[in-house]
Every structure is written in structure tokens, then in C-alpha cells.
Image 1 (spheres, rainbow, N blue to C red):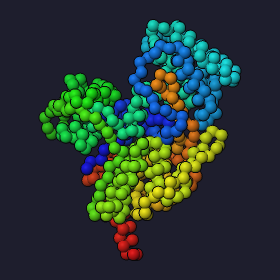
Image 2 (cartoon, rainbow, N blue to C red; image 1 turned 180 degrees about the vertical axis):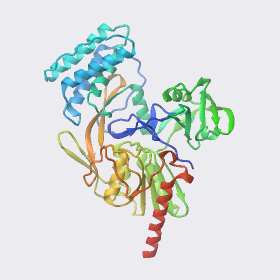
Image 3 (cartoon, one colour; image 1 turned 90 degrees about the horizontal axis):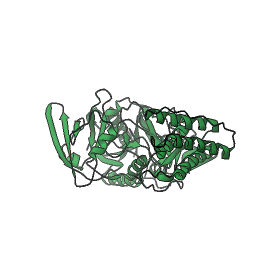
Image 4 (cartoon, rainbow, N blue to C red; image 1 turned 90 degrees about the vertical axis):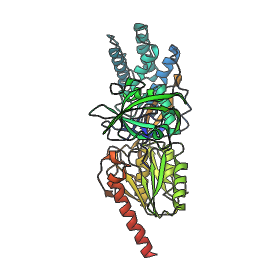
Length: 478
């Protein structure tokens, strides 16, 4: 069964994660691949996050817009994992507004109010800058857009790529990701070739309309319902493919060595599992985890139980191209392999340490190889690092991405949110892997695009060789 390339986008709540520049037909989601701009996310849903209502139209409510700015300023000052300078935040707000106006082809002049370090006065200064912009550019730019630009600029001043403003659309993407989808579509992952700019099929998900229609990896999508795909960004292509359940979408597809072909595919409700698994031979169970979502722990548990019933004597656990997910899910999944002890520790700005321990529901010990690569990030690194530190398995592949910070999502009025880096994390042995990554026990280089292509998957082959030797050694010693 071909591996589904699950993906990462903007995620929510306490987060330890990263994302990539290819995309999935789901909603502003970026999958792990050979992307040029990897930024990975991983996250933990905590009490600060509630379910978000999405797709709300702009309200034009100035009081609400100012509340968005005020709450964002307050959360950054109180919770960012490093000390914050109010003057920098005000300058960032101004920069964000000016950049937005420049994109709208408006010449902007916005003075910077001086910061006196008193929160209430700085909040008033931030509000005045935004209201002055609203008054000056009323009619040319909406108050909502100016507010979003102001908050985005403020957060950008922190020089932290993971601390960002999330629009209602991005919150919708987040909810779909952690819940496994449930949207109207055809069940296909797409990406844009960085050289040709062609929109390509990464993988049709088995059992979905795309899979049944005969779409294959490396197919080029020429057009969607008559709209040429190449000039569009992936979001636009993705939004054309998605739609109401029961309605058709027409794809013109080019395939190497064959004439162009039109596919008429009827959309269905798509649910994307976070796990696929199978037996390889008679005694090795293979599990690939695409991200850490709401149901990942249950899916991994079901996979392990199913594989052991089929006679698995060893497990290959594939975390390659997995950009992260829920921190709670990382602890839960790690607990399936680690009987007891710490899984991860987070450290906030004040130096307070919070340790998450194993749930004590591990499966019986078996030879275990965890496959990792340069796009194994954040929550994936939490699990990989815990398994390596606990010495219950070996890591095989190449050095991981290296994202050792976590974020918290704070919801805002108008169904938007801010994602703020609130802590860093270390492995059970105290290793800080941020911007360093985790070195595998066994190094086997490989192109990440060949993950799941068994004939070319040299890392999987090396993992199978290793576990077969461990099985043979166990049989000899028993």
C-alpha cells in the first residue's frame, strides 16, 4: 500500500511543530517533502484553546479590532518565552501596517508612539497607531485587514518564525488537521515542483475518489475545471479541487509517456487517518505516523495490536516527513514504547520546568527501529528523542529537523488567534535539540521524496535488515 504523505500546516494550542512548502488538498496545509522553506509545527491542546468558529465575515467592529490588538499584546508580554521589549512591539506594529499599505499600493505615513515601559500606556499607544491608520485609510483598507497587519507586524518583531497571527482560514486548517480532515474533496495530496512550477500529485489516499479514478503519484494537474493550475498557488488549486460532497470536479492530467487525460471525479467526505500499517514479511510490523493528531494514540494502539495478532516480532516505526502535532499525542504515542519515566520536559521564561511522564501503558518490549529524516520535527522529535534516551529502540536515517520550542494558541475575537512560543523543551536526558536536531543511532542517507517507495527506500531496507538480525539474535538466545 503506498504511504500517504500526511502534512503539517498552521496548528493550535501548546505547540511544538514545523511545516513545509508543498501542499495537500485539504486547506492551507503544507506537507513534508523536499521543500525549500521548512518550518515545522507540533502542538498541545491546552485549556487556553477553545473550538474556533471559522469563516466569519469581517465585522467592521472597531472595539473588537482593538480587542484583538490588546489581547495579542498582553499575551506576548506575559507568555513569550524570552523577555519582550514594548518599544520593539510598537515598531513592529508600525512595520506591519506600512507593509500592508504598500501591498495595497497606498503611500503610508505612520509615526511611532514612544514607549514608556508602562503596559497601560503602551497599550494605548498601540491602539492609537491602529485607530489613526483606520481613520486615515478608511475606504481604502478594511479595519479588520489593518488590525491583522498590525498584530502580524507586532509578532514579527520578535524574530521568532513560530510566533504568528492565525486568520480564521488558518484556524479552519488547523482544526481539520488535528481531527483528520472531514471535508469535501477527492482525497489527494498535491505539491508544486520548485523547478517547473507544475502542480503534481504526491499521493492519492487509498480508497478515496482520486484513488479509485486512477490518479497516480507524479501525475501533473494541468487544469481544474478549466482553470490552468501552473499559474496558481497551491491554496488556489486546492480550493478548486475541494467542494461540496456529491459534486464533480474535472481534472486535466498529464502523465509521462501517456496522452493528457481528463478525469471527472465526484467529491466525497474525506477523512485522513494519521496512521497506516502493514506486515512486511512474516515477522515485521511497519507503522507510519503522518502527524500527531487527536486520534493518533488510538490509531497507533490499534496498529500495534493488529500487527502483534498477525505475528509481528519487531516494529519499524516511521516518523519520516512527520512535521509534528499535538504534544499530548506525542506523549501518548511515546508511552506505547516507553514503560515509565519522563517523555519530555518544557521550560518557560521563568525557568519553571514541567515534565510529562509515560502513561504506563506500553506494549511488551520488541525490537524497535524508528525511521527519521530531516523533516522529522517537533512532536516527532519529542517521541524520537524519548525512545532514544530510554534505549527502547534505535533511530535510523539522518539528523532530524531541530525544533525544540513549543507554542500556545490564544483565541481572539473574530475567530482569529495568535500562536506564541511559550517554552522550550528538552528530552528525558536533558538534551536541547533546538536548531541542532537529533542524530540517529544508525545513519542512512536518502532522498526524502522516496519515502514510501519500497523499491527505492534504502532506509526502510536498512531498518528491516537491523530488526531481522535482532529477531534472529532473540531466537538464538531463547
